[in-house]
Amino acid sequence: MHSLRPLGLLALSCCLLAPLGCRRAAAGSGDPVEREAEDALVSYLRIDTSNPPGNETSGARFLQQLLIKDGIDAKLIGSDPKRQSVYARLASGTNEKALILLHHIDVVPVVASEWTKPPFAGVRSGGYIWGRGALDIKSLGIAELMAFVDLRRRHVTLRRDVIFLAVADEELGGTNGCRAILEQHPELFANAGFVLNEGGYNETIVDHVSFWGIEVQAKVPLWLRITMKGSAGHAASPPDDGGTLGKLVHALDEISRIPTPYRLTPSVARSFHEAGKARHDERGEVLRGIAEPLDVAKIERVLSPGYRSLLHDTIAITRVDGGSAINVLPANASADIDIRLLPDQTADAMTAKVKETLPAGGELQVLLAGQPVPESSSDTELFRILSWSLRNAEAGSIVGTAVGSGTSDSRYFRARGIVAYGIAPFKVNYYDADTVHANDERIRTRFFAEGVRLMRTIVTRFCGPDAR
Ligand SMILES: [Zn+2]
View: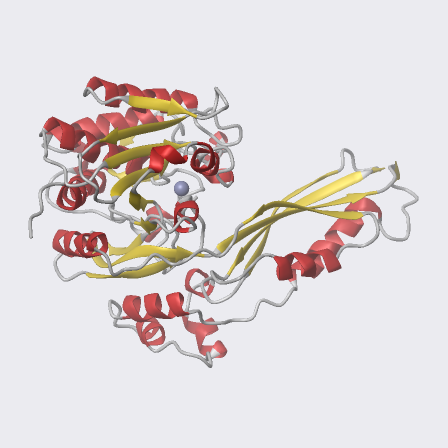
């Protein structure tokens, strides 16, 4: 998952932003590659890859066919026939570290009745392309695919191999996607040195980007499920402890009160200092000057929850399950808790604190426990090319490193010493960014076209003949 929110809200994975310009967005792009990309995105959005259950194979086949059409040998990989990923490689014949263009095929589920447009129809309306995955992250997948195919069509002499990788199961932790592929097929990633993935963000006001954040590090996910077991019974004579649901509510209250003090980690300090340069308000001043000891009162007054989430662990209760009727005490009740730890934190201490809140009959299950992974260095040729390309795309914009409050498959590569950057090549206004993992997800058609062009520039400069 990634979050696109500009840090104003919070960022996580890719962010985009807004419009205006003279060309009518609804008219689409005049460039044939960009028009082709737009059509491909619309078709991709029409494939329902909601996870759970995933069913990514239909999306994987769609991408595979696009690659095969251009004579590229694209393979489906994965042990579950319904949850296939796609892999293709353009060989350079050199020993330079390869670049992986990564995105995830799956999307989070929808509540279709809450949308104003059907979520899996790829509707084009009002200058937007609508649909689940428009921002997270089928748009990036198509931009990567077009950049990849473009190298082949133009017979670009490559100075490094380029790998296109579209994976299943990112939204639920990558166990059946990236993680499994890396463990079971390490030979596919021989000599890989770099990954471009979701995860960055941009601060866009109307259609002007002031700051591009390239994600080099992210918080550590810890997903827990607590379950209360007891006896079913008549609700007219409840036990003193309130029964399983009563105990669950009490435990959740305690969990939500676990202290999560503010603390500044080096990667967050650097990213705040850089992002602060692009702002001329009080928030910019706080970001630029952030240092230990932290001025908690000022931080809480000035910084949005998005920024603050990078300064402490967060705890969110996201699912509660139990009960069947108003007059029945259920025998079982459970809740899911989504915890995000600061990037240098292991899961053990927080898991122990949650466990302490559980009464007799309470059980704790760890659904996902990430590990801290090394930050990706920004002292690389790829980072310099990204910086140049992003700055060039928007006069006066600033580029800096970013830390993701969410998580992504980048952590599996960073753990292996492969440099992984989260980028957001599409501008996104904060109000559009808020549709990620929410209702009416959509991308500005014009911003999508611009991002497709930007990805081609980035990939060609890094993988084509040395332009220096
Ligand atoms: Zn995502």
